[in-house]
Length: 359
Image 1: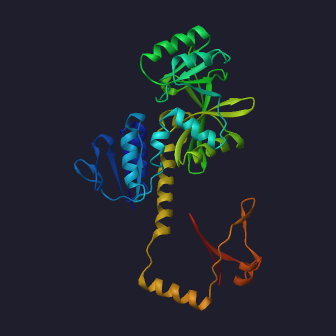
Image 2: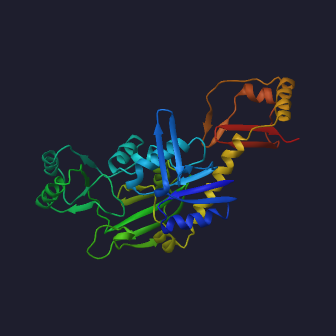
Image 3: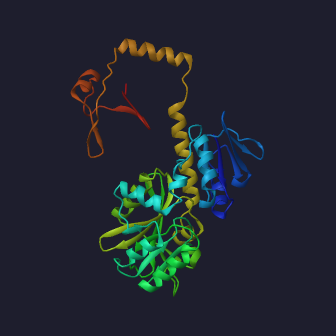
């Protein structure tokens, strides 16, 4: 299988590229600045160094919010041709804190109370209702940039006046006291593969590693892991970092990072996060390819003959679950003559399930 990583060439991206070479037969390392999207009335074309981008089985496209538009465009074009762990629309939603909070709210993900206003005057009215200290954020920004703290009405009002000159909308959020610590969980697929608690340096409230924070490994409880995984699922992300704060009522999500740095969490946990990401990309790509492999003419003829011989019945029905088990209807078990205790071959992939009796 052939794969590519499209990125800004950060250290983390280079680690993932090297790890992907252990699993895929061929891997290309593509710098996003060398990619161009051509949009015409006849369609969209993606070029790399002036030539049409090759066909890949897997493409991991990632980058900062400044490249959200081109990442969304190229993913929109390539998403149905290659396995990509991030949906096209998520490059717009995931790189905007406000849109992210709106999406998470729709899925019932726990978050700090958040306020959005259209003007500075309206925002100052919010200041009359909140309990200080508070957090004021720009919708975009990474590594803790664009996040400010205010411990009084006067300081918050001054910040809003200064931010108004930048002509950007702002988000006001309740401050959760954690002693300058937050939790980062790396979610890959349906699992948290690594997690750490980040502690801010003296005199700093932001726990980000790039802001001088220090990371320490942490074993998350089942509920916190579930919140992290549910957050990734809500945004349709197969790979991301989920940042949380621990409160008396449990974890609350403060941010989701589509392109997290790996140096800090790798050092803190001793886990080869890049390798785990590369291995997941390979397994997911292989799984998808196995589901869409085109059968040969002989296989098609045999399948038609087998169906005719077995007089298979097709039924449109809802599935009934008991916990994580699927219950088969009486009509299905009567037709198949499946018996409890016998051995069966189960072939499962996304959207498809086949069960055959082991002869």
